[in-house]
Image (cartoon, rainbow, N blue to C red; front, top):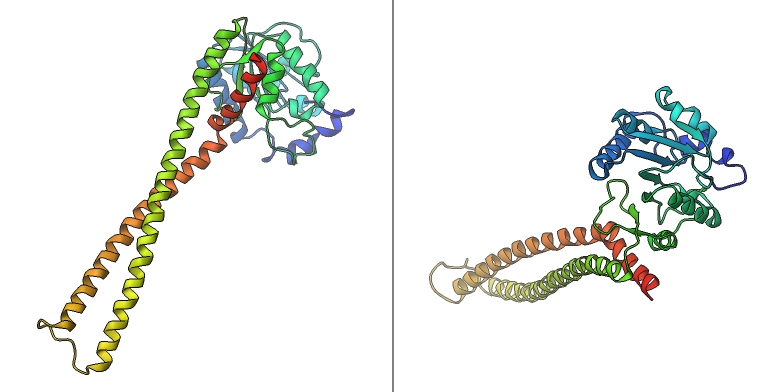
Length: 323
């Protein structure tokens, strides 16, 4: 991590205790989280050598090493490096990810690091990463502005533009959301622009189609609910009118309603039928309301996930790349 003239003050014991949400220490939650990430990366990308750029306390390096993958780590925080498990200390060092690395790697992973750097240093870091690997797993929060050490929070398209300057483009078919919902897998590519455009448009169309279909479904459910609410109001008004008639009839006739045929029994029967219809209507309305709420939740979840973010990213990035 890097960001100020004295990063050791930014990323000391206090930061790791209070600046990462849950205390960033060796416990079951953090170790298991990074072991899971290591498992997925190994299964999906099968790297032989990995650099964790901004490794903090080395949990991901440890996960790789425990699974037989040669992995190294670098981090600006002297405190964090001192906390690394003895078994992997030889493989992690204090340093900036803007400085040249000793070798090239099959894969570089950098998780929530560059937002801690100034814009200028962040661009320098990306250039350095791109010079030392052809595949990069990258994650940088696009919206956490509250953290005091976040100097350069940017949307995904910003980082995609910077990687594109060095010939790296998003693998649109690789889902990196097992790291964070905004994580991206970039690969160096010499493919001609028309093939890049094909991939981006192919993925963009699938996401756009999903988006528009969900919007249409949401609109249909809203329309159904609105229609049922209108019917509900009409029925309620009829209930009031019938109840008023019944009350008026009762006031003018001290005898109880007779089950024999007649105006009173007919009115009572109609009233009961109406109540039964209302009961069924309310049941149907609850069913539709439940469906509407379910799709609303799915829609809100979609807007927060990788699918929604990629839509806007693709539309902006393709314009910059192919204009």
